[in-house]
Image 1 (tube, helix red, strand yellow):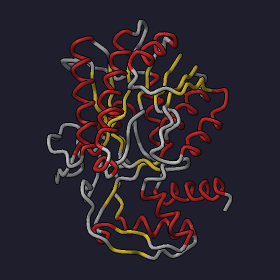
Image 2 (tube, helix red, strand yellow):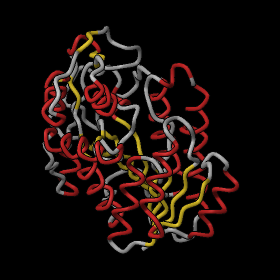
Image 3 (cartoon, helix red, strand yellow):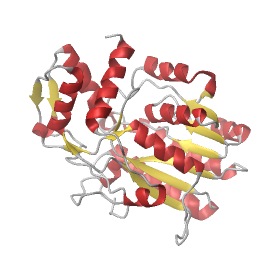
Length: 323
């Protein structure tokens, strides 16, 4: 089986490519290696993949070049994980989101439309699409017409474009709404990374909304287990008007921000100095995934407690930076 992974130098893309390659897949990957965060980290991920993955530096929004790459690779499955990430960054850099998340997603859809032997497309969405929904846990059938950030709006737009292409062209597609994924080789813009960095340096940790927040933290291995299972076999679309399905991927166990910091204190062996702040624009107080659909179709049962996952991350962080 052949897979093409977009965003292969990114956090989830790197782990996905590594898992599939280890399972015997022929894996190709693309990434534009942008400077949203440390490019050395992105290059280190590519280096860690080595010759197990055929890598090409390429912007997915360059539709002609990307379409030609897909045509030449002739993958069985495209796993589209490239995107401009981050809620707060979208406030200052909105056009980066339009290019990567809207034009980029459309480019992927068009390439898949013309791919001869493609079996299905898996793409990344986000829990951010639930916006300010107060009903928890968040279900795939909940309304998602009230985004509170541009990032969330682009991800919901991706879902709508995919549903349309599934209807028009019969492209089998699965959209994955990720809930705060964390773990080794993670993203430096995420709270668990910045908190770890500040705790180890003895700097104050910014605690937004005075700690009154909860997140459904999801360990990377649990996420990649799902992606690999879906890549092996797409779900049934029986009874649907088009071959397009959405899944939440979360831990189904929201953790209070202060408890999360306490787990990091234990993992680092250091006490955190907390600096209480107001809620940031575009942020939400709670995320909580209903994963019954994923459990029914793929037996999903996240097995990594946040204490264990954070210890793995801190151990990797110390090793990566030689601490």
